[in-house]
Every structure is written in C-alpha cells, then in structure tokens.
Length: 134
Image (tube, helix red, strand yellow):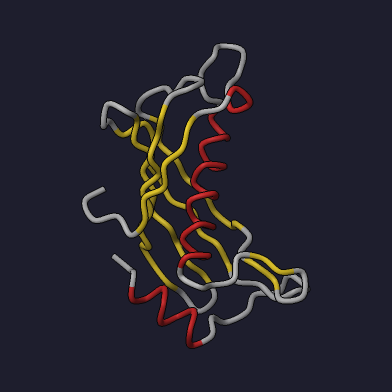
C-alpha cells in the first residue's frame, strides 16, 4: 500500500492456524479488525458501545498472495477507500516480515445504533474519516 492511513504490527498466533500450520483464511480478518479498532480508538471514534452501537461488517473481500505461518511477524496497513452516508470501506494489506503482501482486500462497515439500525455518520465521524480517505 503506497500511503497507508494506519499501520498495525501483529504476529500470527497458533490459534490463527489450521492443521497445515498455515493461517486459516478467515483469520486474516481478525488481524485487520484489530488494526481498524486501534485506528478508530486513536482517532477518538466509537468502536463499540452497547448503548451507542458500533460498526458491523456488511461486505468483505480478500485476495491471498503468500501463506502466513505461526510466529510470522506481520503488519496490517489500512486506508479508507470510501465513506458513505453510514458506511466506511476500508482497504487493507497484510505485509509479511520479508515485505511481501501476504493478503489484500477490503471491508465495508456500517455505523449502526444500539438497535442495529444504520445511522448516518455524525459531523465528527464524517470529518475524521473523510480527512483520512485515499
């Protein structure tokens, strides 16, 4: 990723792997979600609150390039590809210790209220997210 908004270090844990010793395909999203939440927290935006809602995923896509093994050091790079009325589409790359892209893709989240209904981004959320958009 040329100009990531946020970079988050990580490590592939044993629990992330399958019987082959490679990271199970779905677990890449756990690492991306950790990076997303770290960015939201750092930016002063809501991550989740039972009384105020959160950001559930509505669409995910990922292309896998290199396998990751237990103990591998990784870096998740995030960028904001699009901001909608109540949604954010995140672009991500997961980089291995050799500097290669192990996986890349996107995740679309929707800001919802405590009842799970879509909620338009407020002025602070929109300004913060738009400022960091690609």
